Image 1: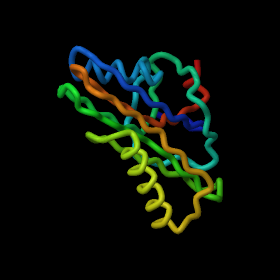
Image 2: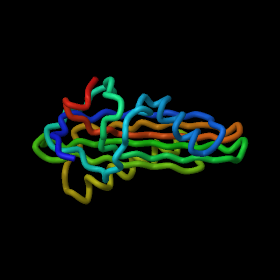
Image 3: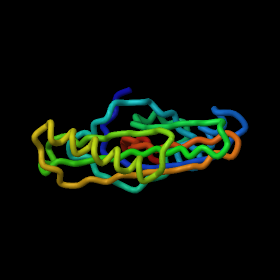
Length: 159
């Protein structure tokens, strides 16, 4: 896969399904990325990439994505997932994405991702220009799933 990533967008979704895989698929649909092929990547935003709201993506596009997801078949259990990104002061340097999923609350997920991003920049010795976290929570009815993702997009991915 060779393409130039020019945009990054965060999204979250949660859903129920008849099976864990259906719950995951339904959470992807709820997040607006259910009809694309996600290619799981590690957690770097390339330099000079625009942060955008999730655009309409071509069905079937291969999309590099950093994501966290969790399913459960335990009724009443609360699941949470979150992703976040932090960008350095210098736009010529890369940003960092962190992901979290667990039996937790939305607030716990948000705190965990924020702490991971702050540590990542401390270790890099870089000041943070901008930091955002996108959490989601779901209480399982039968089979539930939470999903939080940052998609890395090129112009060719857009519908």
